[in-house]
Structure formats: structure tokens, C-alpha cells
Length: 264
Image 1 (cartoon, rainbow, N blue to C red):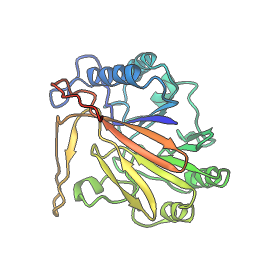
Image 2: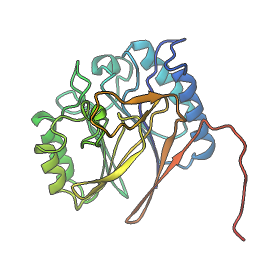
Image 3: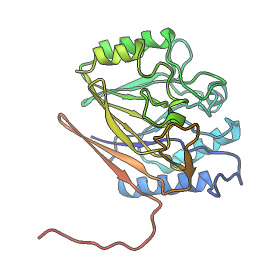
Image 4: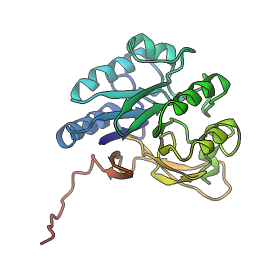
């Protein structure tokens, strides 16, 4: 099974740029690259910060851009998004009984669980009792799970980034739930940090995907600020082969020369 993971696309109105970059141009290049090279993907996941200012026009531009992709797409919201505005454009998008953008999909390889970590008006994330019950039921109902969050659900060691992580990231009921289900959670994915990350959380392998826009350069000293700039963007190709999960980072915007070689 092949899955494409993107995050933090930060779409805005026509003409909006950030760090000199046009987010819609970046997204169109990513979608074009995916459509050309990965038409066999079963799923594309965009894990939040779909927009910069949560304008209805930005969501409408995303909806139009999605027509470039020949495979199903699962959308998530981030701290730059607004659920009410999102649902005005994506009226039929799944949500849970509480109105959160929590949803799941079952495949032969396992259950893909997409978690809404947004708390309105805040940059850091939340996953309280009203959402934990839903996730508990999703995990109880499957033998193997792949989890997606927007916010990083653990601290990364970059103090500035960690200030906006999921609250209670290093302790609390969510971490307890994930650790209790570590044997069935095959991988945990997130965005938000705008950086390439990998490691384990309580025995669960995780990966954080870069943005299609600006990237963060980690500052691992005690500091309130972290550098961010127009470094090369990428998306991830996730290959699930039996018990194995392999993740490739695809620098879709690189247009320089390449040398091609083959193993005899």
C-alpha cells in the first residue's frame, strides 16, 4: 500500500506570499508531481494548516486544486484552520459526533485514524476527554492502526516548537492511551513543526513531515525562537509492506540537474 503524506500547505487568497513563496504554486507543483509519479497511491493525507487565515476562498481554492489528484484524499485541520469555515466548503467531509474533524478509514493493511487536535484560538493543540473517547473506540475496534495528528504529540527538544505542541505532550491521558495500544499502532504521523522528524514515542515509531512552504531549522538550545525560511519543500511517500513501514521524502520542487545511475 502506498500513502502520500503532506502537511502545512498554508493556502491564502490569490497573490498572498510568505517568505517570498506562493503557497498555491507550491501546492500545485506537489500535486502535479504526485499525479505524475504516484498514481498508484491508495490515499493522500494532508495533515492540517490547509490555510493561512482560514478564509472561505482559500478552502475553495484547495477544493479546486484537489481535482488534480486521481486518488482519494483525507483532509485534517490545523491551528491555522477554522472548522466552521472548513465545513462550509467541504460540506460532506466526515466528522465525529461532537463536530470535530475526527475520522477513520479501514484498509486491508489496518485502520487509518485522523485526529483533530485543534483548539480554537490557540496555536498549541488539545485532545481532551471529548476526543479521547472517540480515539479509544477507534483503537479498540481494530487490530492495527496508523495515526495522524496535526500537532506534534511529543516534545521534540526544540523549545520554541514545543511551546506550540500538543498540550500535555509528554504526559497525560492521550500518551497513556497510545502507550497502552503501542502493540497495535504501526506508525504515528504529524505535521505542524515544518521539519523532517523521526523517532519513537513510548515505543511507537513516529515521523513529522516538512511543509510544502517554509521549513524550520531546529534550535535545540534553550531559546524562545527558531529559524524558519524558504528551504526546499517535500512530501512523504509511505510504503506499507506487510509488517514493514518505509517512508521516502520526495523533494518535489527541486529542478536542478541529476545524475542517473543503475546497479548492474
